[in-house]
Image (cartoon, rainbow, N blue to C red; front, top):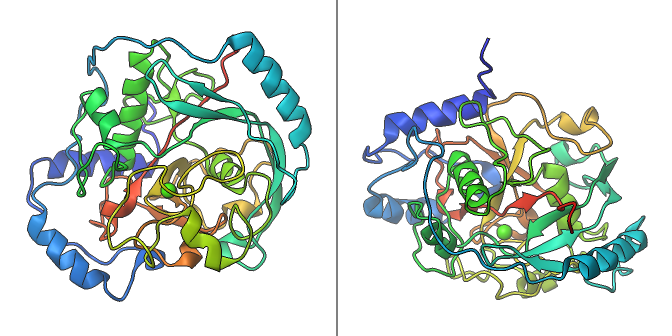
Length: 353
Ligand SMILES: [Ca+2]
């Protein structure tokens, strides 16, 4: 029998097809962590401006973006040597001990990615919300992660429709469904001659493929922590949060160009705030109680996908490294915070590198 994929994906895909070209009529309240006292008023304004939702239709792939490949900048051999050296130094890394930045590469498409080293960390937070409290040791393999949130210029480059509310080439793409994010991943893979990770019919992710995909929830938290075990990637002093991210307190109710705030210890920008970021995992509040210790990929099924990092309209609490959010993949509840939802990509470390 042909696999049908996660319930969440099927619902998102069906909804996207139903709503293609439809007028937005109703925006129910979204998940609590992103709900602010003033958001209902903001949402009312947004409703008047909105015309369409879910521009992704039935077409998952096949977009023939044509552009000239750029040359990989990082010398492969030297980079591998540096990377392996760095990996050896990151085992059991803790707050304050990460002095060296991991290497970065520039992809054929011209984007910078950070070589996140393999390692182990404590996932979750004993003082967090209920779904974070089953703190457990997780080990993840090394991977490449976008240094910045995916921008609207990137969608233009790959000739994909820009779904964003706030327009600007250096702004992160938002109002992007999980499905649209997966479409982007596949398009970016094809444009660089890589094997797409996502099955176009089932949304199943091939983790062995060399193309782009969304990070697992474990990869995301590991990268956000960057060797720390504190509330944020820079420590636990919430007064410093504004130096590292855009949140409700400093965003002036909008997204901001990626990379304007300070990066974390591994050189990743906007892991706290600006746009909340889709992960590859289906969300389950109890998943931590029984998740695998090595490279967990999330539950097999569910109605929502994981969002991480909080956003420009979130309180500080939602920007914590371990804070978990979730949303339906196609905004089936017409989430009020959709203009605060974006993503970044990861990719396997190429053997040749
Ligand atoms: Ca972010």
